[in-house]
Length: 426
Image 1 (cartoon, rainbow, N blue to C red):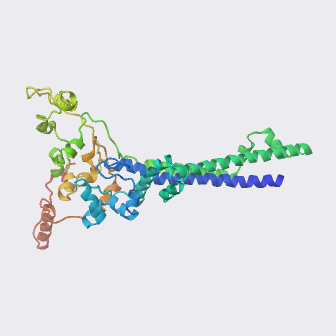
Image 2: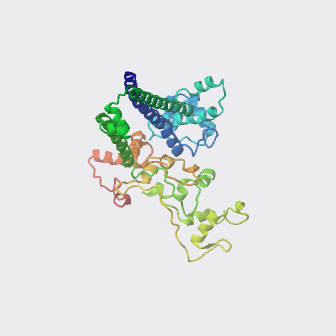
Image 3: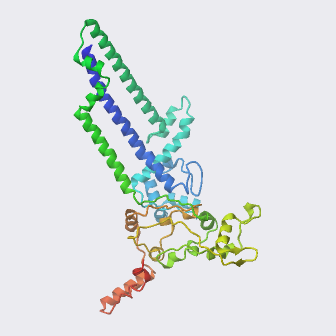
């Protein structure tokens, strides 16, 4: 009996260790796939897509079945390129939902994209699992293949917990039987005396076990190191930042529904370093006449009234007063002081659309920071963006300067744009 107990205890310790590692592995796998995919999906996809309904783009339910993984990765990372290449599936989607255009997410890695579609797959399985009936298990198994569903994860955890409890109960029963037998025989070992006198003998024994202490220290170092690395890596990254603005200006209404060009308001984006926030006089070009009274019982919209108040404007007399105050907008996209970014170089010279950095701005009811704006993100974009030098005044001037140098002619810094304000003034 004694040998059986010792054998069972040695086996149970190994089983407990393996069980713990299995639980950690399952949770880690599930978190890396579905958890990471959920975070990216909510950050980058929800403005245009939903799982079970059409928003701006198509419903994503069943997308893993409609397209293979390689196609989905290429489409998500650079849909415009696939459309331009003549891919039949890409052209069909574009023709069905144009003029809406799928945004290119070149900053995402292949694993990021796989995580997004793993999350979509997991969300699809939730209604099926909730409505499961006896005899439908085969269909569920076929539908859920290729990923870990919540039902499978919950079942696995339940089995592990039950097995762990059974081990504890059997171990306790065997220990009790041993003590009873030893008491009948009149044999009391030193080990049993220590157990009876000190309830914390097991804890003290583990504290003296060098392998166990090393294992705990190793796990602590890994956990703290990972948490510290993640915290440092995300320092200064404000993705998703959405402050409350003094006036609830809807880009979805103005840029999306009314299709007002971005540069009508942000005139500096095409001509200078800063895109510039429009003055309220630009707003008044329209709101002298558009007052949005339909939804407010004949009264002027409260948000438009805020514009009138800031300008000290009387809509009845159409006169401006002298008590005018600027609107204190809250800055959303804020680069570090050591980072130089010129809007005109990207918008005018490179021909990049606003959505490349700002995301689906035309679908945002309230603006938030869409891209991380990190150095890595910018470098990846520069690696992928092709230079279009045809019919581009900037490169034409540059080529002309090169030709002058080849001919031995004088070329000054002014010829290369040295008189532009942004060369010296940030």
